[in-house]
Image 1 (tube, rainbow, N blue to C red):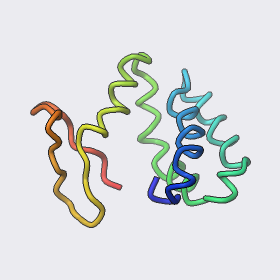
Image 2: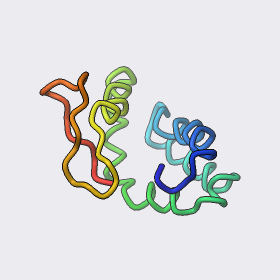
Image 3: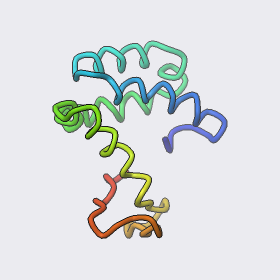
Image 4: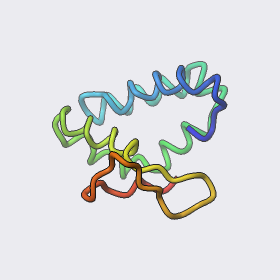
Length: 104
């Protein structure tokens, strides 16, 4: 989400959620293509390039049941890494078992 400004954040996030909330990897790939051909994909092509670059690492995510995937993709809210630093800030509600966020 570092590719868009704060006014674009919510509509872009809504569109991207359709990708990572898809039932299968094939459907997610289709939705990524739809995103790429749509308004935000054309305005912010770096987002599409970023997703395509790591797609092989995203595919295993769809092997988990939908309930588990929701836990996985909301875990990033538990740890937050400010831009320009490498050490995540541990938020008060983050437990010791929270995983480190993926690098940006």
